[in-house]
Length: 107
Figure: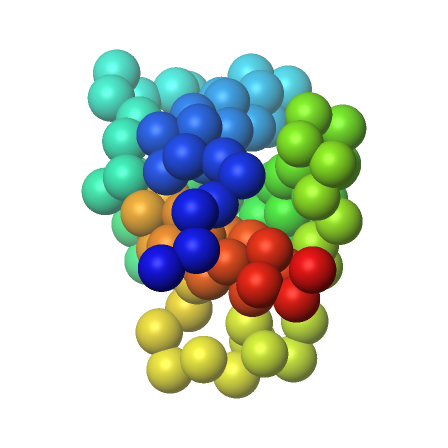
């Protein structure tokens, strides 16, 4: 198995930090606990479609600035998956690990 240039904990923190920033900027309440089970999008989730797009763009920028990784998170592949990679923090971290693993393997 190829070692990723960024750990799962770092990815999780990156997503949670981005989520927290978006919630603060939009004056939405921030739950006491933000973790991998936190729902991002869909019924009972924290984000509407505009906030989700903002999070995706923010994550793409953070990944490039902090880790030198250029990824496209919202593409046909992401949108056509049976289980949305944007449903929860954990699902998004799983998807990020997959994309980064593929990117790292193509070097």
